[in-house]
Length: 270
Image (cartoon, rainbow, N blue to C red; front, side, top):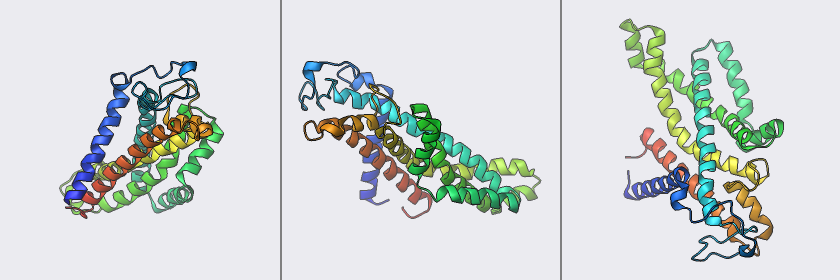
């Protein structure tokens, strides 16, 4: 790995570590109650007392960004984790299924992949209704097709690998050879993809919240905070700027880590 790439990786890891810390222990970093309102302190610019300023209700934007990390990161991790498991199961089974079943599953999967993930998530939320739980379900369903395709390709590649064939020749039952030698390899490939997927899921969830389909006020959530400041950008730019920066840093950092890991797994980086 080149030095510049190594430095970029460590910067991304540190950023993600800080965001995870904020998500797990927001009370350590926050300076105010994220829900406490103070009308006389409304729309104050960033200062020593309010590092990121205050919003229309006088709530501390910095504290709300800190507390919002838990919700935004939680949705991203949950959606990615469930999508990985569902994609692993369906993709692996399709990879060993008869040709007719495999073809049918993959044609349906191709149709879903033809649409942008955010559009699929938007349609799902429109059907299920708004709310944080429905957003997590929508983002999960939108991400699943990518994992299904990769799992299927990896399964078909590994099932004819030399070490799998050797295990069968030695008398290892097919199911045991599959679970011991094929599934771990498929899971490893999906895990690298999931690192990138976390950022995409967070971005999709924030976009849905921005449209008013996620948590409701006064919940501290990055997408909702972005929406809350869009009507006063000229007067109080800080309300939307700082949650926007938080989303950007999280998505970019997760993507950097995921892409570097994928490059190393493919042997393109030393």
